[in-house]
Image 1: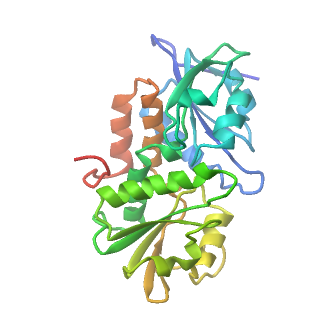
Image 2: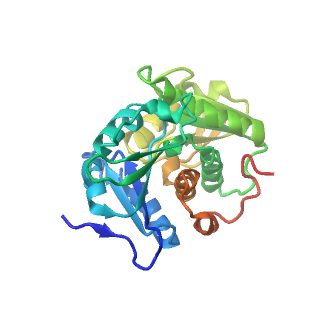
Length: 306
């Protein structure tokens, strides 16, 4: 197995590893991961950028053996904290002494922790999932702008942030509520609601949750697939001509639904990945600005910014 070497001639070799779930059944599942990795690679932020997957190759278990760098920043491209970010990924990376309490998280606040990989000796800065980073609220808003083709979308519109939800992991819903609350407090949408597929309040009853005539619906999923292209449109009652074939906007009752598909396909998500790595100490501030400029035209309605 060949190793991916860092560029020569630099004092410190930094690598970025993006960990995603992947799928044996949906070939499009990994597409956003590759696209964001390409964006970051082109920015020159890291000496090496590598994608790895739980269900596809290259596997998480082998990735540290094929990346050669002094420091590796591992960013999970997952929506919430839970089984994969707290158990599977640290186990597969063989992080020596991993203890989830190092994140000191309340379910949405995992930042980063530094460990050594037991077999390769690599210094690994293990980051919290992209989906809980504050900058994801910016990505959700950018997704709303993209689907409406309106850079000022907000006044007169409702916004639904939709998650899967599951009683097996309370953190799954926390991430959705966290971003919905921040956008409600800091942006000018008329109404903002957190809705779910498998728990209350459910996306099936979307028109019951809004008074606005126009509602943007943004699923907080990494990739488009069965849930975002079939389940959620059908649950909302959108007219469809098959998987992924729905009008934008579509009409449900008296409400126009602007359904965006998975938030993870929004190019600005590359910025959130870089923000995670930067928070963990990666020296990439110039690259973050380049990626921001390349993935959106303006930042004048960004949540949390003056």
